Length: 280
Image (cartoon, rainbow, N blue to C red; front, side):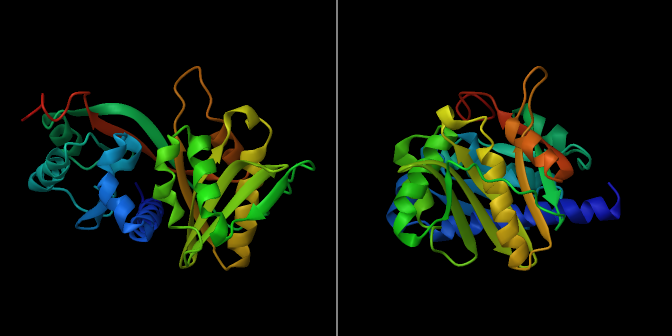
């Protein structure tokens, strides 16, 4: 990875870590305790842990080998952190800049490659217009925190019970949230977290029955215009990589809108049943 791509990868990871750190900090204390939500730093890398959800999406390591140099003891410390929580997790590893021995050490700990994510970036290129005439875009107000969180969870296919995990970031400094409505029904969400001159884009969820109508692109473009107006010069985000024979519609939308690959993450995770059956 050359110097420019290395800097971009570092910015991508730093933006995501900043957003996740603030998400955890904004969480109601009782909710955080119920789900065991925390973000542990291992040098400049970050281990997100929400073991009460039981999903890899909320239990993952960002920045290892990109923001933070690796060592065998560090890898063991990270694995032990999640083992003590009793939580499965995944480690994002750059396909382009995988440090020597990292994959080997993860394999020794019982973690194997299980899918890939693509990280994305975009500058201030012209944002295409897009606004379905029959739908309403709105900036989310603090009084709409519960509605936003519930819509986000439903759009992601998450349990409604997880909505309180997201309520704290509504109305919080540096966060901007958006919803699309069909009449009185909220059907899609999106968020922007401003981190200096750059911004992280995420929380894009659309209710199943409203998909394939351009709603993701509409909200994405809306938040881009807000971010550019606020002085942001670089936007970053991440999404899953489709397997052969399938398509990720959100990735296709982003590529149409001048987003480009920053780097590919291979996700290393332990087999089901961990930690009891592996290296116990």
